[in-house]
Amino acid sequence: MLRTELCELLGIHYPILQGGMAWVSDAKLAAAVSNGGGLGIIGTGQAPPDWVREQILAAKALTDRPFGVNVMLLSPFTEEVMRVVIEERVAVVTTGAGNPGKYISALQEAGARVIPVVASVALAQRLEQTGVDALIAEGMESGGHIGELTTMVLVPQIVDAVNVPVIAAGGIGDGRGIAAALALGASGVQMGTRFICAEECTVHPKVKERVLKARDRDTVITGRSTGHPVRCLRNKLTRRFEELEARQVPAEELERLGVGKLRAAMVDGDIEYGSVMAGQIAAMVREIKPAREIIRELVTEAERVLRQIGAMGEG
Ligand code: TUI
Image (tube, rainbow, N blue to C red; front, side, top):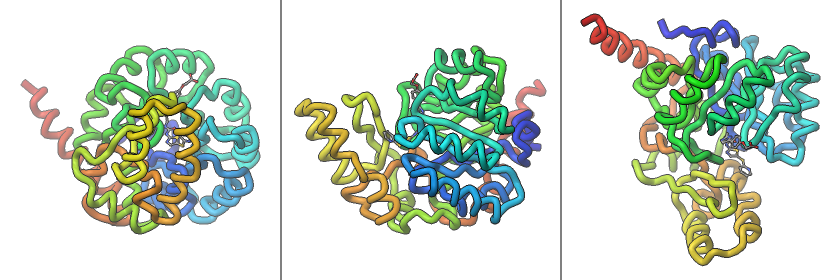
């Protein structure tokens, strides 16, 4: 049975988290994932605190199960969004793109499980000292803002370095990936890109179509020169970024080019000039189906793979 210590810690049936995705994972998707037995997560990105509260209230109306909120630490609204998740007593708070150290005790005092995303052993160890409940080790196969190491390399090193449960993220697209993550010592997985193509995901339909069409080498990393590398699906915007980066234009100019582009893709459906953030597993996503079915399929496949591989260990 696909159950780990993470299931008890978070009060969920399966150790599968849906990654918080700005402009993509709202209350509807998060509630559908939680109702399917995983942990749905509202992605707040740079959204203002009022929007975050509205989404939390909507999720509470759509599910009785625990759900999470992801706080993106580069947001200008981080302080206010933290205040909202504390006031609304959100069960699980994940963070990305920074060090959430100064918020951890206040979140935990409000009853939240705090699970930062990390991309290095050093930050994992520093955050373990602050008393986090678990860590998400995210490899550079992920979509969006990424670190430098792959999941295969990062996860076992973080597992060896800390004593809290580790959740693997990045490059996990099916049940085989879940089995592999558990083999690396993870207690669960976080998957973002797979859930873009959940029926309940309210992203623009053109984005879902683009993900379904993606082939193995269709994602690219832009923004390395700005210090904020981002993986997205190749399009006219990423080509423009590549041209400017080759000419070594100043980081501020590149940052300006990125402003508003995630929303343009995910909400308005501009998949050519918008930023279609997606992970390398986009090529493995072949159909749109309800979150509950995605989760059921993932669990069934992971259990089958683990049984087969487990038999090899019997000698
Ligand atoms: O955060 C993500 N993925 C994201 S955030 C995003 S929106 C965005 N907006 C403006 C600029 C860039 C992105 C789209 N996708 N994933 C979690 C993640 N966190 N990946 C890597 C990290 C990370 C990186 C450095 C976490 C901590 C960190 O530490 C730096 C420090 O302060 O020590």
